[in-house]
Length: 295
Image (cartoon, rainbow, N blue to C red; front, side, top):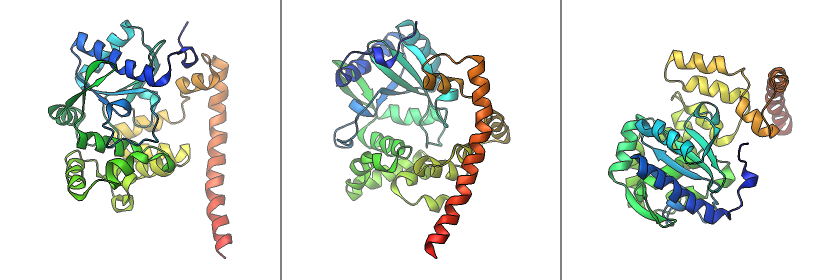
């Protein structure tokens, strides 16, 4: 029988800290290089007091992802959602442990267009260590971590972007200059602008629409079209297009609270075109209503 979040009884702040420690213990035992990001791993100077973490996040050296995947499963973590179906960016895989709760393994960070291995090398070279749950955990240096928090905020609802204030808006000009330079090295200008302002200056970029939808919201249909436009090759775009009509069985299972049956999948598949038509109709009606109000 699989574990569920309801079975996790350890108080969240304690669980998260020991979750960081437990994952680091597994990484040390298996020679995996990873960096703890967000939540308790972030320096208080760049972390919003309003932000409450719900899981442990780590950025793993891309070549070590398979190794940490196998090690986590051996040590009691169960796969909850995969890279393929976890998010529009395919960047993270989620695991659940009966004691430590959720952990997200990032193989790259959304918004960074520098090659994942090169980006990890950049973060790893200037890493520092902080003690979390009694264990020394490597984390990005403060400026790098601040950039990651801002990029992460670009995928949050507008009212949930406290990290942008602490990591960017409240920083002095010299600090912002350093962080802006790092954004350029990471080739992350579009996503950074989605969080801090000025996204419209990047309308010509292939991933502009994806970050507009991620930061401002939009229909599932528009999100899929944005993902196709953001593809780095025709082959990748075709693969995304072919996946669009398919049912995300993982998400369906989480919504139902059980393993979906064949009938569940078929019903969901039939529901999707109806939902898409409804989204399209609402998208047409809203501008019309705005024009009437303006008159």
